[in-house]
Image 1 (cartoon, rainbow, N blue to C red):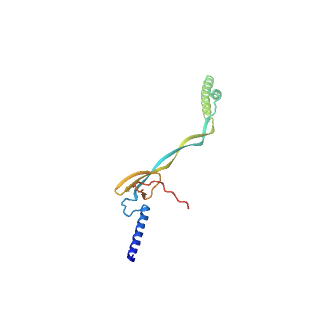
Image 2: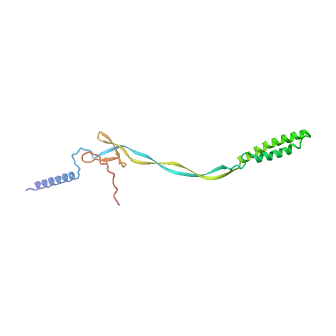
Image 3: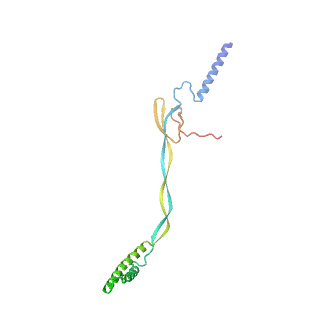
Length: 185
């Protein structure tokens, strides 16, 4: 065998082994099939979560004292006596009696009204806890709507993670959408 022939055979075996190694890794020099889909757009799919909670606060509440004399009899009597005494100071003779009666009537009415006003303004205050249910809102991402392009063809898919700029394809041209795993350090 001559030297040129041996070099040619060695060179041929080296090329054959190189092509075999490349083909066994899934890389073909002659393949026209794309290895990645280009990501065109990514839209997060969100859901609003409402969580009820109880919100309480202390509130001042004004109460009316219980009325002991609902008909204001005490005020009417005291007013009538005071009005009668005051009316008795005016006039003479028969006029004095009319002034006393008029003073007693006016005093009785005034005493009745004054006692009613005092009873209405007789209050006390307590503090009560008032509660209501309010809704707290938060958003949760359910996934991502992804628009992609493989060559001239476009498509859409929902993924559970946000993709990079490209999505890898398997040897059949299908998307590989598994979430990337992080390597421990």
